[in-house]
Every structure is written in C-alpha cells, then in structure tokens.
Length: 103
Image (cartoon, rainbow, N blue to C red):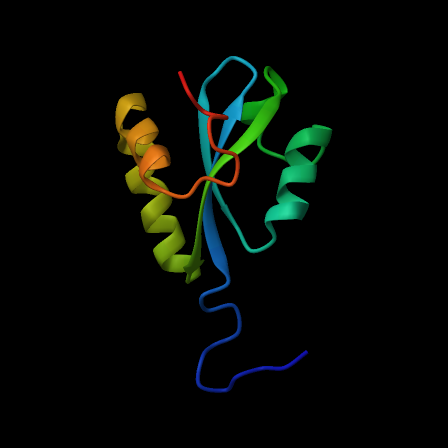
C-alpha cells in the first residue's frame, strides 16, 4: 500500500453517510470503509444499535474526503438538522441512489 508522507495515514479517507431505514428514518454515520460498514448494518452484527429495531434500506448520501475529525464534526452537524434539512442536503448532492430517500 502506498503512503503519501505529506498526509497522516487516514487523512481524507473518512466519509459521512446517510442511510434510509425501513421506518423511513434517516441514520447518519461515518466510516473509512463504506462497503464494510453497510454490510455490518445490514447483517445486524457490528453495525449501529440503531438498526436493531429497523433495517437499513438504502444509502442516500455519501460525502467523502474527510479526516476523522472533520467527519465527526460534519456528522454532528447533520444529526442536528431537521428531517427536512437532511432531505434537502440529500437532494442537493449527487446521491448514489436518487429517489431512495424521498419522503
């Protein structure tokens, strides 16, 4: 694996994501490996406790290029948003699954 010594390991590798759950709620999280995290949420093992009473349905929003610190700050900011604001954020971004979070 190549390592660019001008940046600390992991810098810029974090992403913030939003998942629409089976009850139409929106879950926000951060990760360095989106596919692995999605599988963990879907399997019910190793994913967020949030998904114990509901199932993840679709990945609605991904914002890559964060450091651990900036991803955590962005996650906190998004979690403070209203549902309407989150839906506007999703609509404004190029969602990986357009329409998956309409509601």
